[in-house]
Image (cartoon, rainbow over all chains, first blue to last red; front, side, top):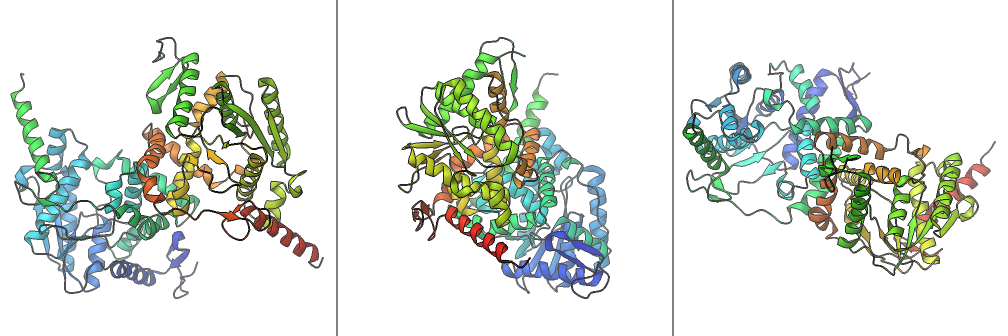
Amino acid sequence: MKCVRCRGRAEVQLRAHNAAYCRPCFVFVFRRQVERAIDSEAMFSHGERLLIAVSGGKDSLALWDVLADLGHDTTGLYVGLGIGAYSELSHAKVVAFAERRGLPLRVVMLDEHADGLGVPTVAGRTRRPPCSACGTMKRHWFDAAAIEGGFDVLATGHNLDDEAARLLGNVIHWEMDHLARQRPVLAATHPRFVRKVKPLFLTSEYETAVYAFMRGIDYVVDECPNAAGATQLVYKDVLNRLEAASPGSKLAFVKEFQRTAQPAFAAAPRDTPHDCERCGMPAYGTLCAYCRLVDEVERKTAAHAGAPA
Amino acid sequence: MKCVRCRGRAEVQLRAHNAAYCRPCFVFVFRRQVERAIDSEAMFSHGERLLIAVSGGKDSLALWDVLADLGHDTTGLYVGLGIGAYSELSHAKVVAFAERRGLPLRVVMLDEHADGLGVPTVAGRTRRPPCSACGTMKRHWFDAAAIEGGFDVLATGHNLDDEAARLLGNVIHWEMDHLARQRPVLAATHPRFVRKVKPLFLTSEYETAVYAFMRGIDYVVDECPNAAGATQLVYKDVLNRLEAASPGSKLAFVKEFQRTAQPAFAAAPRDTPHDCERCGMPAYGTLCAYCRLVDEVERKTAAHAGAPA
């Protein structure tokens, strides 16, 4: 098999793109693909300060690697979720990457900082699924860190598979509110929101894995232990079947959604948020989602402590 | 397991409805479900003349059975597609059902009538996938028969699984035109269209199979031989996985689509059709889809005949 760019020996085949590449050409094409996504969606420009949310997985580290190489002003943000050995290992990988590349890194440890609330504690006390608790907590601390550090943009490593799975889930349940906001760029609709972007939204999980391997990026290979059995994985499995039956399905699903269907959903936009009465972060009710979650933890902890033995 | 209606011994369990029924209660509930779909979507009323498209499969025969029992004025329509032994067997099953029930049946045989064009001929000469050729031909002959017989409504046996698979396919490719028209009732937008309805759109394939079995309906069990490998089957498989992971998914997917999402797609309605210049049937271009297909067959047959041996 030959590289479609240089006719050298190909190392990777991409069925969705009907193409194969050698190592240097793949790295070139991967970066160009990310650059094109950034430009075509007007995600950010040179000179803006980017905060990259890094979990220690392949996607976020590959994203940081590409954005730094493209000459952007990048700082990493690691939020320690307190999920035992998984979180410790992730933390170590992120620190090692930042040191090796000489890039600045900010760290927020939820068990030490953040009212001492790690994901397992919150999920346990509220009896919410861990991924639900984790989502609310991460969104809060991402925004808080971006505002505190004066960043213009928060970039996350969500890839094509993540976006396709989320889109399928939103479509299966016809979550009109979520469909109205599923976009690769979300504008800052509140003084304590920064613009949020997903530069890898058209880049498959397989492509970022190959990129991380070719670039020698050392990342956490294991999935988060809480993800086992998550509905998201059922959607990914189902999408992989569709992709196998018809290569390119996933890319077309997400791309065409943004191009033709998303505007129909976005026609009725959600209200702009106001200020959370407690913490001042953006909120759609009296309190923001994070403060409501913290309240729930406190209420349930108190009820548990007061229950007869 | 007990019947949730009469507490007798249950014969069938419906996970999507979180219910189980004995035989008489299942038949009762099945009919009521169809009746409710008809009423809530205002599909038709007593006194209107219904033409039921029957293929010889469980869905269309179950539909005819229910509609006749509900006291509607029903006539069956069998279109012989010329697909060898499969078509012969289907024809025999439909004729036997109509005779047993003493119900009127109309028959259109594509190889004898209809310019002598059966599905295999049309698909072979145009090199279209058989299901694509078949769809165009059936739609044409359904409309033609309904108009010729002075019927008010054409009812088809599309079930929940069919509708969910079609919806998933339309969503995966974001077929905005198709999504704008995917409804259980389509009004007659042209003098040579009749109203089209799908009374089983919320009734699963499993439920119609159980109903047909309980009612002793003798139907063609085999799938159409052309359906093997059809993309529709991949969608059905994928939806069955989602249903297994979360019972009721299929029903919610189709029901919520109609309730909340479909209006967003229908906001930009398609033009109303005008008359086909050749046959006078509804057309969105100069010719209707059927006449274009017939043209293509003739052109390609002539080219083949004129080609050097």
